[in-house]
Image 1: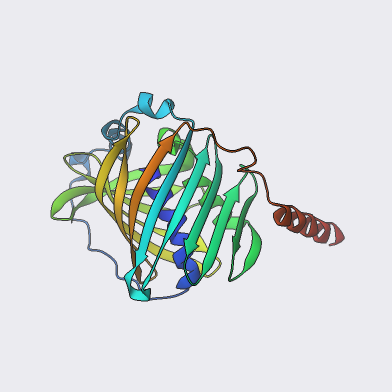
Image 2: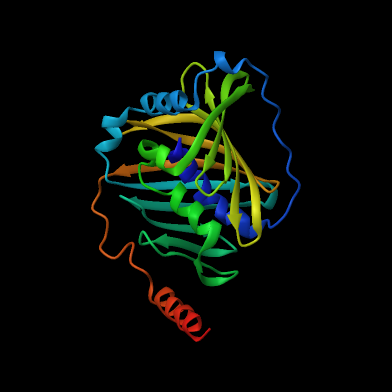
Length: 270
């Protein structure tokens, strides 16, 4: 479940730069069901772990590199994004979009930073930082109960013509996400959430149309996503696990270190 969102959110950050505001259409309303007849949110989360490979398979993995292509038809744009993760919560992503440039984002596990042609370098804090660290925690599938204070099954809804359980997740910082799990397979097929960005909170919907297995776990490889009214498609081309990550990949860049020092100095002068 969280792996799906890791890939989705990493790319949605680019869309947030391109589309600061747009109308958003909610997708349907879950059918009312007797709560006693529905599986619990915890049961569905655990079923997802089992459906995608099981805890033992996840526990064998220590890092992951994902290469993704994305297309934004409305803007006639396409590009690539590479995301590198390592346990427990280190991340580096690089987005390349012709005509816009290169956007980078990273974290050494504590400090989250971002660099893009539109805004330059910045250190991310507040709700946006919390969301990044939550979504990009490595193998967060296994520790979801420490990231969310509740998981409630609220109904059943059709997704792609098939019934799916709708689960309302509330994070520890009170961000609400709705996850839809295929009733038969247990796989995550849709996510509805809000992504904190510099432009404010942007609504995001993503629908998974295909999974493939890599190193014992199933990963979404085809996703249709909409952020703030801008639709894009994501195609996963390559997934690697337990590779030799180049030294320094997760180190803070020099300009980020200098920015951190300036911010610390300003705080001391207050």
